Image (cartoon, rainbow, N blue to C red; front, side, top):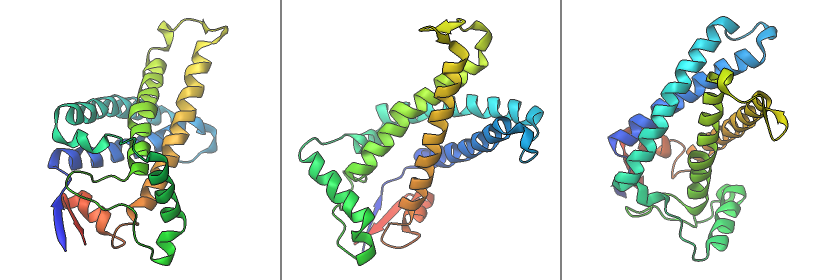
Length: 203
């Protein structure tokens, strides 16, 4: 059994901070969206909490980007194009079928590569595409009075709202998939333990 230190302290702090902020944003966002339902938080409470959490999420995202651009962890997100389609397909088949019949994992974690190709593309999609859209649309709401009345002939605030809502649901779906992936390590809790301690244990 080999133990690899794959999750430095800054990354673990960022991960759990980001998770907490996203859950707060999800709860307050639902409270605002369904304000007449009479559940979760009152609208008057949800709005300032949502705004504060959104500002903190922006700072958290900047920390993540800077940490990966200027630190060593960024190498794990570099996508190797060689046989990418084949490696992605093998990973999908493993998650959808192989894992349930105790098949050999098609990807082996190493000190140089801790993310399989499907994880890389998923995380890049979430952090390099969806998160910036979520943040920009959130700031658009904060500065709504300064937006133009229309964009491309459509109400600007409506566009911002639709982008923010759509991206929010996509990231909520990403969170659910992420929770499933946590359970697909060598044991049910090994991936969660790695993100708590920094150490990945594998064969």
